[in-house]
Amino acid sequence: MSVMETKVEILVAEGCSSRQHTEELVARLLARAAIKARVETIVIKSPEQAAATRFLGSPSVRVNGIDVEPEARERKEYGVG
Image (spheres, helix red, strand yellow):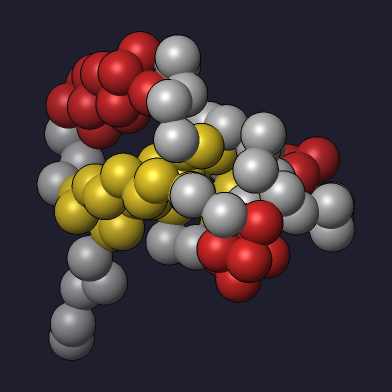
């Protein structure tokens, strides 16, 4: 039986003032829950990249490709912001 690796993506707009706080919060939550995960911060630099990554706003956090905010899962307004 294979165990799926947990992947956490932190998507941020270039210069996002909440980037560091979000990275630290994700690290604390993973440690508290004793979850080993691959964490990647992705900096969104253009409207094209925002559309390609389905970026909803800065910061956004996804676990295994699913946004942690349930309301965000239905939104379709992508952009750098």
